[in-house]
Length: 302
Image 1 (tube, one colour):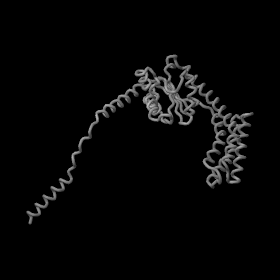
Image 2 (cartoon, one colour):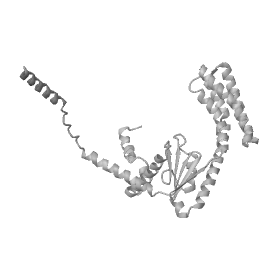
Image 3 (cartoon, one colour):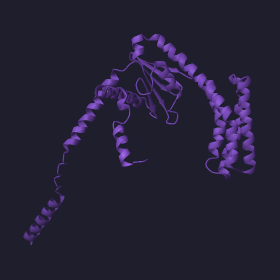
Image 4 (cartoon, helix red, strand yellow):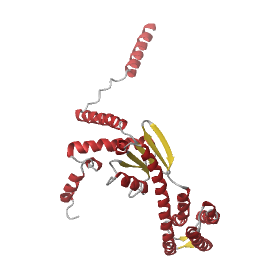
């Protein structure tokens, strides 16, 4: 009996051992082409790091602040003024009404009535602060006129709890001139402040340093085309387009990301110059010309 139990124990133990033994994994097949391309990517990343380490001086511009990095030192300075934000806030009143009523038309539900009522009640106290912010004359009267038109429009639709697209369009078109006037004044104030600060920094640099200066502007997607500070730096440095000494880092809100993009632009510029005699060639898709040519036959008559 003991012998039989011993045999059974050996059998079950052997089964357990066999079941638990892991199968030896087969090594993944190595694709030589994939490995070759991976080496390119590694070498590219290393080259970008070396390229960026040699860049300087540079200005990192983000919103109301600019940072000058020069000789290993960082100097941060404001490059905007309060009047810019005051003009923008008032110009946003009709924009707030538009987005609050978009999309659709017809009846207003309780949530939108509450939101628009809150907006309406915020207008008068905000406008009352403008005189204390230095607003006088035509500038002040323009803000008061825009605010009065906005309150009148809101009073009407809130009383009826209804609106149409046509009356909303009539309101926005009627306020557009005031919005643009505010935008014009805000832009001038912003550029004047930026120019004062950059001129101060320029006076501290040698001509050789100034000739090496790069600028990275961090900003959102929508104003990319013609963005104010980008226009300023392009004109200041005599650059025909963004991408060489002035780089727009779209939605790259963290500084390391934006600087990595600067390194990419400079390295790719060198690639374009080395292979094609054109610094900007790699700033558009290398496949673009071939794609445009092939699409003529792939989709003829389009």
